[in-house]
Image 1 (spheres, helix red, strand yellow):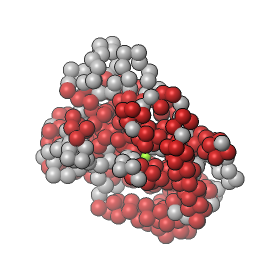
Image 2 (cartoon, rainbow, N blue to C red; image 1 turned 180 degrees about the vertical axis):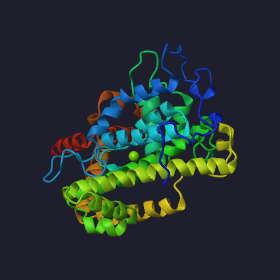
Image 3 (tube, protein in one colour; image 1 turned 120 degrees about the horizontal axis):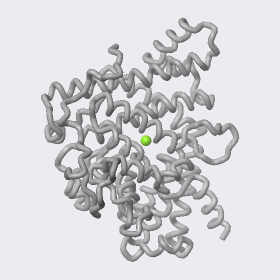
Image 4 (cartoon, rainbow, N blue to C red; image 1 turned 60 degrees about the horizontal axis):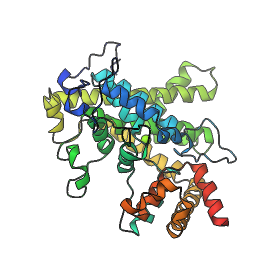
Length: 389
Ligand code: MG
């Protein structure tokens, strides 16, 4: 496997990266602002996301394990915040190696999970189910857009964070494409075109971060057995065998960490090389070529894609849907659905600034917005209080 040098030899043609020039269309903001003396528009956006309340609340939201005090829960398991920081690190690495806009990639990585409700995917599923009874649905990408364009209040001059067009487009499109027919409200985000590579790579960086992290936390929690991980992932097994052979005296867990580190590195390197190869095969030289490509160009090679799918299937069967986790999901869904119904019946239980949204957004969406912003511990506290009341 090819080794990355400090000076990457996998740089893409310069015209493919999103320009950080404050004059460019993608650096435009809904409310005009003076340029900063020494920061680019995307560096400012990354900082705005980092300083947002919704970002800080990610510390109290489930990645895999809930953030509630429970027996066996370690403080060092990932929260959605530490997962986000790992995605940001991988995204910066990939963007830098390819000569893409690292500041844009970082801003998008920091925002990629900001729209997640409490209790991870169980919470998202429950909130979606509750809304569907009212003819609506919940989508964490679209919720993230609502957070950065409306809910965050930090500026006297406008609501939201007033992020650049490139960051808003990337928030909407980092993991899926939307059609203008289904989402007329997204018409300004080039729905008939693919997003820039800086946005496309976030989904893969996310997958790489959580698959390797979840093997780590899954083994650490005792839910995953080492021999099962070795069976499920030939890539892990190869690196683990090599680590055991090279460091026979090392503590067993250090050989596991070494193997996980190598798996992460191999996936990231493969992503960089595959994007480089696909862009080369297309003959793309400018961003417009990426936008008009027949499909997304950020992808793993077929061999690594097979590995990714095998590890993901293994994690679904053995960790995410393990009996202990299933119990947690059922409880999480009960809490979300019961609190949703309670707030629908008694909107006066919501804070006044949320109640003020009801006339424009409708009651069901307002309740969902309020619940989506909660941390795991806050929703449980409120649910207990409401259940007693
Ligand atoms: Mg994520």
